[in-house]
Length: 209
Image (cartoon, rainbow, N blue to C red):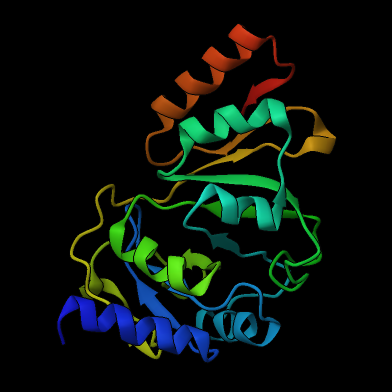
């Protein structure tokens, strides 16, 4: 099946509550409708993941990002420098995001991947889950040959560009601080952007851990 046909099939599957293994620039992801509790639970089951561990979701535009999360005006400029790219941004979620996705938290992890296959799918389906296509605790796959779990369709997008998980940045408005929670792909660039913006705009509370 040609890549274009795989993408069309994946879109139809996701719209019908199914699951898809898809490429990103970091690692292969396991996708399902991120606004459907039933679809999200399928992802937890496939990954053998505990429901107390939240999942991230992926969007294909800043408009879609605004639909699912609250973004402080002072942080939006930073976000547009970081995304699209290999970064997960933690933001305060809106009601539309099911609690099962975030394990009951008011915070949701958001990816805006820099990968044409992923973006082509999400553009048609809306937000999908963004979690590595592996059994929880095992190494995330960077090539389709490394994928050991099963979904309704697996899209072969070749080797992932970075071959490592995203850098995670918390930008939750209640906390009034920016914090790097995980060093991953393009960590040095992310740190440079954050430090530059914090200094230039006198943003409070840039912490790296």
